[in-house]
Length: 429
Image 1: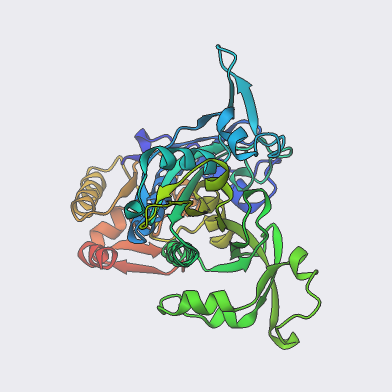
Image 2: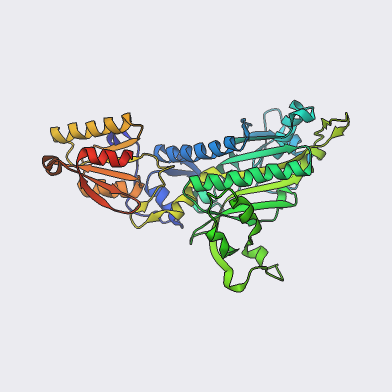
């Protein structure tokens, strides 16, 4: 991709109304633009990151055995009346009437709809267990949207829903999602702490939030410092993490006898990026979901729900990975793998060499943002640092005459003068 033909409206100055680093950098790096309070347009660079995050979330859901579908954003109010949540949910739900005066809502979550769909499609115990998920836009009318995509009104979410025949199966489905969440966050370059959480308006008696530890986090988390020593690659990591103490400050304050010794009790700020629930028959019973059991009787399936804030994750990744110059993307979600900087695009030799490097990188499966603009070198370097691509490959007349290019690793700032072939080998290695 040639930067001269791309839409990348970077900003030199920090917007006055952006309070946290992720919001500031997302605006400055041309990832998003606000269209209304808490509602954002995703510009080309931001959309590429969002799709990369969603791809990893989808991969780990599929790996966990969940089945993807897609439910609508608009839901009839009658569904929520069946569960008893329509009047109880609160003003965060956007309610309206269609042209036929039917009461509708913009879905903040999908427990009711998935229960109704499953009720209409599944009749036998042979069709359970099942976990279904989708990645879809949602809307919650926050009274005070703030912090950019971290607390917006419209957001992209992965929500999954499990259906099981008994308590044992339901908790197994919960554990499978717990493990999938750990794998998802690790693949995104993040370390997440699972925090025992209240179930709130979703309901049930088992719930965990997943927090990314960052100094700019919105909530304080108390946890057993032994959590920091758990290797997420260890197959036993989910069980170990489940067994270690971690609570938000508000819940921790209610604990009268903390099980963690004072010298092991740690406290950090956290950003919530996922929440999972096991709530049994809360929705299946009230909405009349039953299947035929082996003995011919009718059985009410047990359910759980599992959410990941896909758009919120982008903000969390930036909060966890940035410096004074800008964003530092993990390789797994970066919008492009390589930022190719041509210092002299008006020079025929430089133009040919840059085009050749781009062609070789793309042929090898690497995505390239080629800065071919007629701009000062300092502006080009500043733009690449701001948008945070993992590799920066710079070429100019002097280097080419000496047979070298400059390769920079954004995460470390390490630079090397290398032959073009060696630079390509290092990027591809």
